[in-house]
Length: 513
Ligand SMILES: C[S@@+](CC[C@H](N)C(=O)[O-])C[C@H]1O[C@@H](n2cnc3c(N)ncnc32)[C@H](O)[C@@H]1O
Image (tube, rainbow, N blue to C red; front, side, top):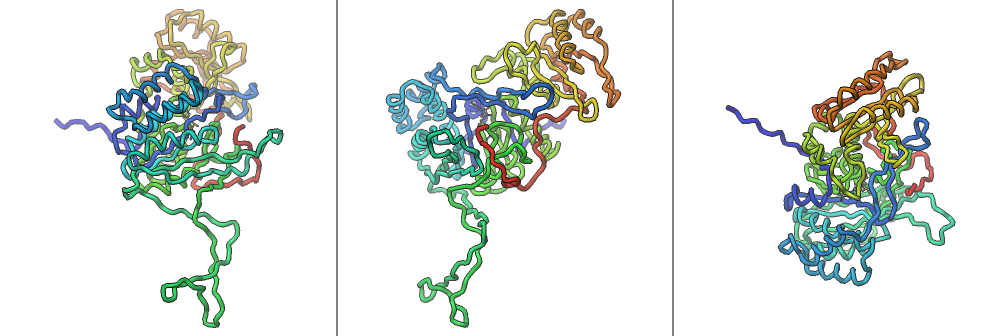
């Protein structure tokens, strides 16, 4: 009897904390290039801002709580580094001494918590890089000077090298003129290689000049460089249209109207990742992004025929990446992704429902709403007055008209009172329909109450829907999907593209907004 062989996938997407994923699943010396763009120590929350549609002014969904505190996690990290536990020498002596010293100088504060989190994770990244591998850490001036000594202490003692501080100059940023400082217009990308004695990959890149220049032609005469002269005895010139790319990268920050904009607040331009990937990898190489957000690294890696591994701790990111890959590269590209950490059975769905993690919120609800709506709904993270509504999708009902489809997700005990309250919300908000997702099986009175609400008929398509639909998590796990062919696309589409338009409208756009 022939054994069935599990299909192999070139690309892997992990939903979870990157520290756990790196330690459990990523083998030593398997990665050619790692780029990371972790949340900065900016003490603000990232809001995923969607197009303004519907009655709400702006539907905002909190993607990641970027607030670092000196908490149990930081204490655990500090003791792990300084005692070198779990590690049989996981941290270098220089790294341990540095962290002890930094804590003396900085104290037990958010910045120190952030640096500890980065130290542990960069040490894992160092482990998984091939000897020929490269590492790019994207940060800004708030912590780049601390991060550089941390990364030096991890890479340099074992033969690695710091190659460049790359400055991404987003020249089109709009500035707040009231601030008493020179407007900030750069991010910092620290570029390292794992082993200076290896044959590490590096290709010199060129960029086009704004205007071609005339350059004196030179040639060697008896071993000495001299100006080249023509038959008429006059010096000769070459016309140069490009130049070698230096460490200041002039790339516009993404504007809301740009084709590649996904609506993810910290999304980076594809042009930036294109340079990193082209400089430090070959076709077929494996690229890791351990904080992959809406998947910029992944989309560029896919387009440039590299293999990739992406990790993110929020389901919104995972959902956006799947959507981005499907829209750019089609369903075949989706089939080539090994999706890990996403609930595939009741046991893992229950585990997600009961998972507690202060860094992220409502992950079970996000997963349920986005999975059932095929990534078409928006997540409602407003606390309190949301009337039990966890998400909203929009159905096209007429020429430029739409109605809401509301989602409510319950991970605990359910009863008919909940359906009654949800029916009230759906009617009050004049929504087309409501979808009640439950981990537990619904009771007969719940089913009866939902049926009593009747049907909704879309005036545009004349299609009939139950006004209130009850869906179980088990059904979603078995592949049940919301049949909403006329869902309005609310998150800005990342369209298929190969060329990055560089500020096509010449508009000024504030990177931080
Ligand atoms: C600044 S964003 C990255 C944006 C990305 N470069 C892009 O272009 O879309 C940082 C991401 O790191 C994720 N993140 C934060 N902590 C994480 C962790 N411990 N493990 C995995 N992902 C994490 C956040 O959910 C967020 O999506």
